[in-house]
Length: 165
Image (cartoon, rainbow, N blue to C red; front, top):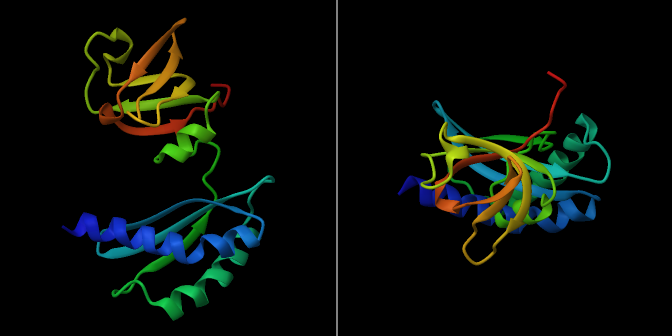
């Protein structure tokens, strides 16, 4: 029950602030409303054509704070955080997968996918080749072949960046 409320809160906040974030020259990458320990966090993630810095986050925070105060969509105390998605950004929505087609991703799985040996350790990395908007399945190139990962099998997906290790 609480999970549904937090999802609705994020959707309401997204609707309230999206136009403002875009008007400032940024893309609204994600909005999450989550509980960590005893505290609630409203996390607004922004992206842009240039690297996002602390001043950008501060600009967005100052612009959306009055909107949130006036609309008052959250009944309980919360911490507001504005940040960039980072180089190894998490992909959570169909929009994220569509935008990152062609990038390398690391997928953590709930369990190995039957018939796909590359998923045996419940983690697979490869080039994101396609996203099916109907099924939400993704296809990645891994080990020289294309494999399809069902949306329901993925627990977390992030852009993969080789830091030269």
